Amino acid sequence: MGMESRGACGLEPLESRLLLNAGPRVTALVATPNPVARTGAFTLAAAASDVDGSVARVEFFHDANANGRFDKADRSLGVDANPRKGWRLAMSASSLGLGTHTCFARAIDNQGASSRAVALRVIVGSKTGLVGSYAGTIEFNDDQGEDLLRIQITQQGKGFFLGTFHQVALGESASFQGTIGKRNRFTLTYAGSGFSGKAQGTISPDGRTLTGTFRTKQADGREFTGTFSVNRL
Image 1 (cartoon, rainbow, N blue to C red):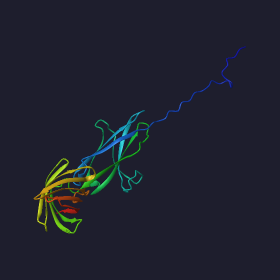
Image 2: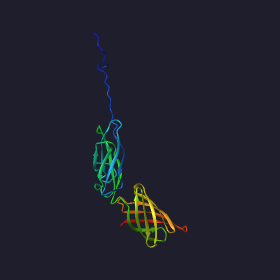
Image 3: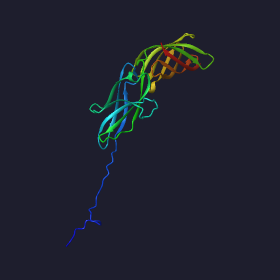
Image 4: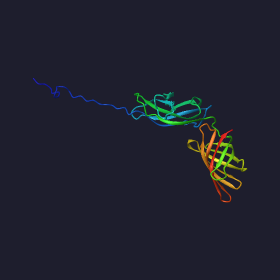
């Protein structure tokens, strides 16, 4: 009588395979527009992918405790489970309030795994435009001391603004043109009667204050440097 060998223990060897889920990724997060007026609306848009499955939804959050880290204290802003037009969330800026805010996006895949949260700064201001009147002070780094400064921004376009300024005590006026870069930083060049120069600085998150430094060159070759700060009237 014969028997078929089935291994040392009389059992067929078993094979097991462990399938690991790679998990999804959020590769980009943008806000449009940014900065945004408090009375306006903006859209958060994320790019997400999953190499071994599919992205089921993208969740958006606000850094409610303002610590710059994604944690359980953060407030849910909403969820997008329809990728047909990309992973997006449209919302009112008034729900965040004035100032600079951090928003997060994370992806959840079809197996329930979540990605690392990606952060984005959103600036909510009282006005999106800079056009208007400003007043403040200009302080020289030499013995000229301080002067009152008036600025009038007359035109603003995408990434630029134009206007004039007037130093009250010195009675000097000039026209300027400026550009706006990342993080609300600006640079501008100006020219008046017998002088010209450059300035750079920062626009406050609410769009009401401009602060910076300047360097002016007179027609006779003398140079003056200093700081300035103006507020919207």
